[in-house]
Image (cartoon, rainbow, N blue to C red; front, side, top):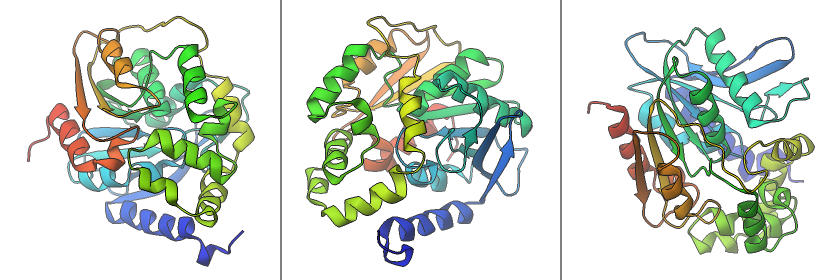
Length: 302
């Protein structure tokens, strides 16, 4: 393993932390209950006049790597809260619970502990599952919900088809790569730019070691602990809030047809926005359009 000063992932993490801090956020960790500690980014100086907005990351690297362009864009208009989900980064628990519902309960407890009474949610992929459950369980707290690239209506066959498409044996080989070929398979279904598949092995190994290796066994348990996608049925309780679905038209993890089906299931006031020429991470591949869509949905004035 290359020393940190030769590691692209370590150097880029330093840049990302600078982006968060220069946007007025600072990182903290607090206990939520007796068994769970959540690491998160929050406003260094809280402004009561601003609405509250929570970004919840997906499987993969910690929130720092997934929301940089959104933090820089939305920080002037919102009090931002960006947690790391349990077993990502410094967030951890002694509990045996591993479901996305437990993740949702933990984030909700974090916000309650911080005194954040009302907030809107933006969740991507696995973070969309978590956001859905927070909105479902705490409708009196959640104002609006953005679910991006997140198949809350996933069935067991969807996972099986994805693993087959990626030419791997198990879903954790794809979502938690251990070698360059695994990470290339993930990039192949997660992004729309084939040039990324040409990245050399030493670079991919650095990314794997720095961003995917920590707590891998615990993250495998999180995948096994999902309540969504365990059988052939879809069990969705419609949300009371206004809901925005944001999808890449080339998403291969949760194909666009899932978004169209989800639009008719997840609530009464649901809007679907499709970002062309992006795959599973439109917030990174076309951050400008992604941000504008969410800004308009949340009603932010220029």
